Length: 333
Image: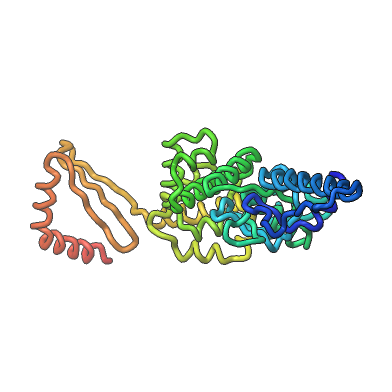
């Protein structure tokens, strides 16, 4: 950029695609036509042309500008399940501290909040730069809501750093905001309607606080999350809540937290499921299944004469109980 353009940029107020020069700020051509004044007019005309070029570059998002991190807000929809105190974030922080910001973020200006911007992508970089007290290098571009989330999703797709559960919750949040399925699919590239529906359906089965406690769980795919959701169908147990609150759990990596939580709900299921015993008559006309829990026993009668035999047994319970008591006495119990 020329020195003239640098000087111009210094005294221009922040420019976005929605701003125009006002009549009050436009340059008026002097009436005098002397050689010196004509040269000044030519210089001013050149500056105006460069200002217009600068304005277009800013509006197109092709020019990198530096913004105060405190003037930048997050996207209106969250795409990550992430703790900014994680080891990955600390590594990013260290990299920017040592080497500076290598890749600009993409933001859009708020249409009704002058001087403020909203992130399309680059949330972690903005958080790191804010923590370091540094300016944010950014492309500023006018974006609709749909364009913003498509840019947000595509950038994550290219980086391949969103996990399955992050994608599922991102899709669910977009749908909850009224975003069309077509736009949501655009954020995930070639994801089919069927796959997208299954992702959103699974996300709705999982309590948000449970997923937040576990985290992004890198490497944990759809089958495992589906099994976990099925195990949670009866609700979150106190044992699982206690696990989430324990320092030993929170100190684990996210994938390990998932495995431990999964084992906990599986153990709950094992303790809850009844023990099944069965009996069949020699002619196979009656089958009885006994479902035993800690303090209860349920009998289920099936096959061709199962119901009839069950009714007969019910009608003879008094006699059978007497025989049971007598047998206990005879055995000395």
